[in-house]
Amino acid sequence: MKYTPFICIMILSIITLAISSYASPSFAATSSVQLVINSQKIQTDAPPVNVDGSNMVSLSSLKALGLHLQWDAKGRKITVHSSGNRNTLSVVVGNKVAQFGAQSLPLQTPPILKNNRVLVPVRFISEAFGAEVIWNSADRIVMIRSAEQQSNYKTLYQGADLVKARQIAIDLPSADQPIYNSTDEEIIYAYHFPEGEALRYYDYEGNHVSYYEIANDVKSLVWEAVVDEKGRYIKEHGKRPVSDSSTVYFRKHRIDNGVDYGRVGDKKSYTGEAANGTLAQIIMKIPNEVRTDQLQSLRQAREAVLSMRTVSLGTELPTIGIQTLIRYFPIGKSDVYFDATDDLITYYKIENNKRYEIWSANYKMDVPAKHKELPFFPYHITKEIGKRPTITTPVAYYVYRGAISDLRYGLIDLQGKETELGHTDPSQTKQYFPVSNEELALLK
Image 1 (cartoon, rainbow, N blue to C red):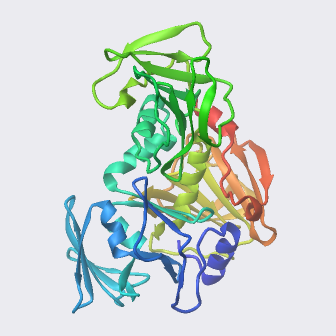
Image 2 (image 1 turned 180 degrees about the vertical axis):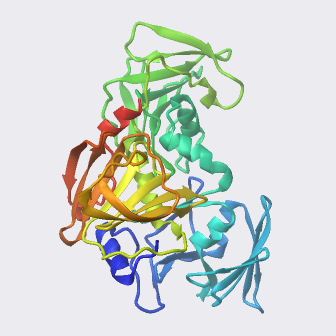
């Protein structure tokens, strides 16, 4: 499905997710944009710029993706290759066509030369080599995840397996270094996590404790302290976190790979044995523990799909335009969803960091109907292209009215019953896909 210019403007006014666009080619410095590659903050040798809506970064900053770069000053040509991809990418400063292997690919924005630095479109270069690119407009962060790391990030943020998610969290690199050290002669290692969570934790090394939080792929040291024999903080730095109502612990034995674990304050404890490897292997499965911190992760994953490139079916159905925009996600999902306007509904599937249009249909809102494949959709379909999907779970819905900056959201069950869960102003909250505990409860 291809929207008309009028519809595109309406969508942008509704979701306000893109960076500033320009009527004619121009660029503006956006030094406040942070580039993060595989959880590492990249300090670039030139500030990022925005050209006609595309984030441009210095060529050298992408070396952290494992890319090998060559610059031909005479031909103003950049050649990029990686050990994991046999194809070579070639782009020329000022040229809107790139060569990737035997393919010629169009560029929305060509590379530019600014202050003796070559700036390239970060999304195009990264995705050509299988990396995932996520733009967080609220925090102005570009996150890039290399192909081999993407499954780990999916488990970290969205996986139900708390053991694997916590192990990934512990092994995630952090540029922050503690300023204190343990003063104990014999060091015992332990980790504490809020029950049901994986994205924040306490790291104990003897009588030194560090508290970490993970957001936007970056693990940050928020607080640290040195503890005396009575459990008092005799030295601390940073903002002390609020105590959690329930915490789980994992404590390694000093002389072997044995692990004691359980819930803090619970009389019942458990014993296991860690596999060889990093200290993260001491994380064990706590009986009856269910993950609960996927709200933010699922919201961010849904927001990320909006900045992905769209691959259309090639046939465009007519539409009267947008007054209201509705998005439907099967519960717990961010890799498939529906867009619906007043007379057009389209189904997308996310693959390889692109939105593929799978099915599109015209419908009449004033004519009720039931669809076995689409139990949430109560309107008469008049014309369709592509393969109609079958949805077998409840869906989360989001109704946007851009003219008044209004968002309603909730759930629709398999009988078509709608339950509204919230009503917000996205221009104030900067959240376009709130995720509810009620939705997560349906996944258990």
